[in-house]
Amino acid sequence: MMSSDIERVIGPRIPPEEMKEHRSRYVIPTALFAVAAILLVVSIFLPWWQMTLNAPQYPKGLTVEAYINHLEGDVAEIDGLNHYIGMRPLDEAAELEKTFSIIGIIGLVMLILAAVFVHNRWAALLALPALLLPVLFIADLQFWLANFGQNLDPTAPLSSSVKPFVPPALGKGVIAQFSTWAVPGPGLWLAVAASLLILIGLYFHRRAYKPLVDAQEEVAE
Image (tube, one colour):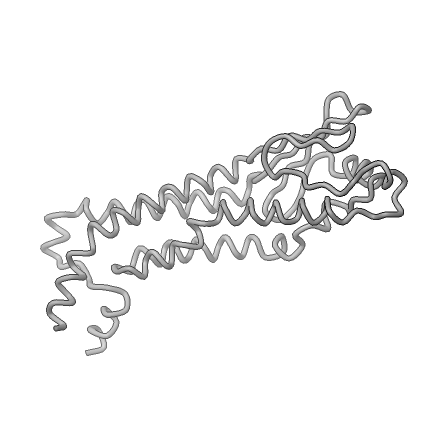
């Protein structure tokens, strides 16, 4: 009875004879979910976003790389330039997100792996946060860029010459005599690849387990 109740929640188990005859049908979604989880783990150690600031006094440009929990690169120099137009230091952005980012990604990885053992529609719900992660990252990044660009310190030395602005999260931006170029980092590309693998995995997951779910529901009736 207990086993039957559990199967109603996590879906039917694969009969041994079915697994033996159609092993690849069930291995494919498992493998896709597992690779997606690995890509997200690797992304923790790589920059997710890179921005280059071109300024007259820096002909080679200044670059900052954003990892999920810290910034690297010419952060101090960019903060020095931003100070003159009244923009807050870059490290003050997304403090909460940076604090919990590693734990958050590990949590998403656990949800993906849990989806391997769920053989019904709930697997899609478990995988959904990881599937949407790249979009959520860019949206959060754009929020903070807009927040910083729209809330300049009016007492800054060059505040009168620069109006509030919204730096783009991706692509080219122009602020006074400065220009920026922002691109995804390898970590974000891995997250995008993980999302695609999850999406494909959900397709094969449904194709593999829906007949078993339908058979389970017929027996329950």
